[in-house]
Image 1: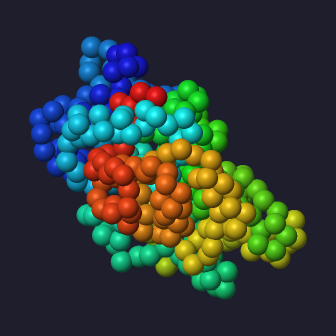
Image 2: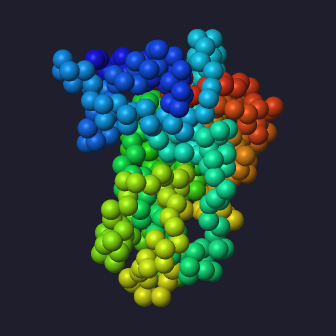
Length: 352
C-alpha cells in the first residue's frame, strides 16, 4: 500500500463508529487494517500480513483507537473545498487544537457526546487545590496515573497530527497551540508548539522547581510499588492518562518526595482544573495570534476559557477564523467557517 493511500484508508475505517461498525465498508476496514510497529510512530501507516490477510490484534487496536470519537456525519467534499478556500490565502496560519484531535489516537476527551468522560462516568478530574492539600488525593492520583502511564506514553499521532506537521514543514503553519498534554504534536514532527496546559511528560517539584522526565519517574514508582505493574493492561485509560482503581489498590501505594529538596510535592507539569495557565505562556500565545493571518481551531469545543480567549482576540483583530470539530462549540456564532467533521477525515485532504 502506498503512503498516499493512507489518509483515505484511515478515513474509510472511521466511516462508522467503532461500537457499531454499522456499514459493511467500515467492517471491512476494521478487520483488514492495522498500524505498523511502534518504532515508526511518526508514520501512521497500515501494513498487510502477506497472503494471510491482516493481523487481528493490530486491526483490533486500530479500531479501538476510534472508540472515543463521537458519532458524526460523513465528511462532504464541499466541506473540504470550503476549508481549502479558507486556508489558501494564509501565509502565517495559527492552529489551536483540543482533545478532539487526539480521540482518533485512542485518548478519550471530557465533553464528547456519548463517549466523553462526562457522558460515561461520574468521576471528575482532580482539582489543583485538592492535589496540593491532600496526601491521600496525591497518593490516589499517582497510583492511577502510574497504572495508566504505559498505555498513555505509547499513544501515537494520527493522520490529523501528521497533516499539521506537514503544513509546518511547508512553511505555511507558524505555530500550533494545543490544549492537550499528550505531546502527540511533537511525536508527529511539529516543532513550533505551545502546550497551553503543560505536558504529562515532565514531573516538577512545587517547592524547589526541580523537574524530572515522567518516564524516569515511572521507573522510580515501579521500584517502590512492584505489585502494581501487572495492572497496566487491564484498565481503561481516562483523558489525563490515569485509570480507575479501587481504594484497596491505592492504600499501599508509595509516592516519593522530591529527590532534590526531600520535602516538596511532585506534580505533573500540567495545569490542573482550578489552576491558571502561567501568564507568560498566555502572553506568548497572544503574540502569536497578533502575528497570524488566520486561525484554525481543530477538535475543541472551546468550552474552557483558556483556549476561547484566543478566538475572541482573533475576532477582535479581524483575523479570519475556522473551526473543524464534531459537535457545537462556544465560538460557532463568531467564526467565519465551521466544519462539522472528524479532523482525520479533513486535514489530510488539504493542500498547503
